[in-house]
Picture 1 (cartoon, rainbow over the protein chains, first blue to last red):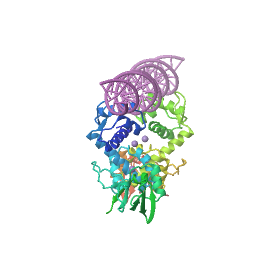
Picture 2: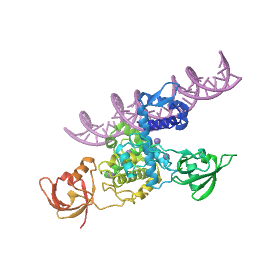
Picture 3: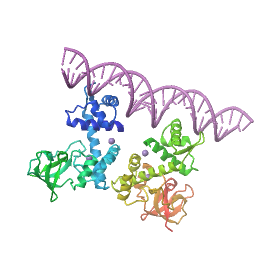
Picture 4: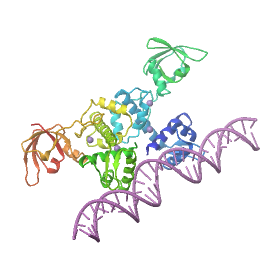
Length: 218
Length: 218
DNA sequence: ACAAATTTTTAGTTTTATCTAAATTTTTAT
DNA sequence: ATAAAAATTTAGATAAAACTAAAAATTTGT
Ligand SMILES: [Mn+2]
Ligand SMILES: [Mn+2]
Ligand SMILES: [Mn+2]
Ligand SMILES: [Mn+2]
């Protein structure tokens, strides 16, 4: 597996999660910031190697071995993110880029020892679950904040958008994973929310609310 | 800097240390496990980029910027080795291979934070010095065990050969860095040594003695 | 249903890092 | 000094991963 092949497989995995599993050439090209013709070439190669199912003009989906490979990469990526935040004190908005490189280091023993060193974490710094060695997820019951009824209590457990600008915004407003949140009210006009967090009442836009996951506590 | 360019620069650095600084095409090819013709191509490219001085048929040497680059790589390699041994409990004979990959991760911030996390180590698990951020070494006064007079006391501070077979041999014989050693006697016939270590007297071959560094304690 | 728009693939190049085989230069030995 | 040996470079090829431009297939809108 080359670095490039690995990145393609990860992208196909992430895009396939939302859809029925089948991903279009253009969608991959967009995400990889490359050209559709390059995607066609790579997808054909991955198909020959058995990682994806591919029918010309019909899109691609991961095979069983392709899915296994993707999960191993996601596991490595997220474990490294935990390491960077927990052990090296990186800000959570800077870890993705470095983990994008570290995920390609080839050593099963390294991943096992890293997992142990981190005390077997179940989620990464953005609240995303870390697959176990055999590819199993602990599934969590989480909902986007804008889909939660007024009056409900929850704990902030993840972000949908984990881009640096959004994460920096959360830092600036003292919103962190693990915080308790009470939904006070919703404005009809723009769907913005009034919430209580860390003892203070604040007003957040629907764009923010639709990118924060809560686990409802009752 | 591609991964391959970085590996070439590191090899030229290590080979140049022993010689006058000028390294031959074949020496590089041997060490890189590649063909001389490939080395010629790469060396020409590195020369165009300003990392090495190169005159056809006359060998290569690192420029100032090339040396700086090599030292940064050596620093990263050795810091990662310390991490693997100290934090992840890797055996010292298995870290080189993994560090060979980790040294190529591009993030200055990562190296700084790793250095701090490890509490600014001065040597790697094999006793080799770690260059500082600006490329300075702490020079240590160490000698090969076979060059030390009978009766002298020393502390084992490094290995010359850090190949897994030699390191495993030392483990098996309970010889580790930091151990105090007294040279008891030398056999004329094969230059083998009788030494006292950890309270017991043992007999070691000249091949072993010529690959262990001691710092003489008096 | 069918023309237009969009998506995807094909064909032909480029760059990087290799290789083999042949040519050239340098070194060594008589 | 010169022939043989060794080291090094050149020439030409290959494989991976990109790209552009053009062709082909699919989807969309009327
Ligand atoms: Mn990546
Ligand atoms: Mn993450
Ligand atoms: Mn390397
Ligand atoms: Mn080392």
